[in-house]
Image 1 (cartoon, one colour):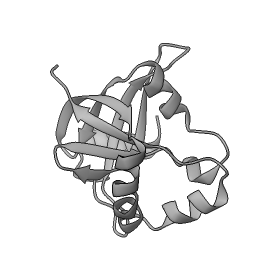
Image 2 (cartoon, one colour; image 1 turned 180 degrees about the vertical axis):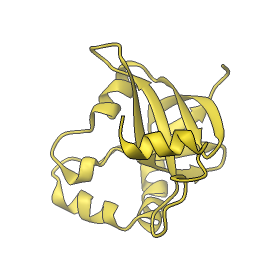
Image 3 (cartoon, helix red, strand yellow; image 1 turned 90 degrees about the horizontal axis):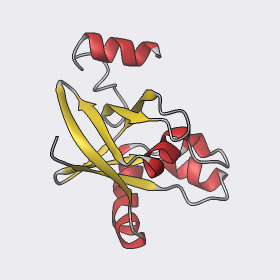
Image 4 (spheres, one colour; image 1 turned 90 degrees about the vertical axis):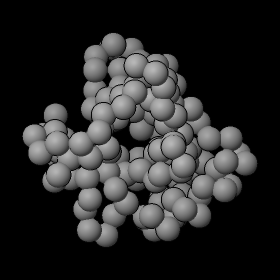
Length: 133
């Protein structure tokens, strides 16, 4: 578990949720697609109504991040947003949703535009919808 995750959890999101110059950060708890092991990934997010949007950029590398593959196999996950924990179901944004959301993603963190320019794949946006526990 990385230091960011440890500090975020230990302070109940007081430290780590808001980092100057970045979009807010959440902790995504998900299950490994092959291993079945519980994993936690700290990720920037963009609020969209009641939903949260995360970006499968992997810094513009050619392959999707592991957490993206995990969510495709096991879409039910949990997030911690600040001090709030909530169960979510993940799905990839449709092309229409991506077109609407991408400008907000770039506004939240301009580096995503560089990542998209650097890679040959379309960077997926993942919508986290609240679900019943």
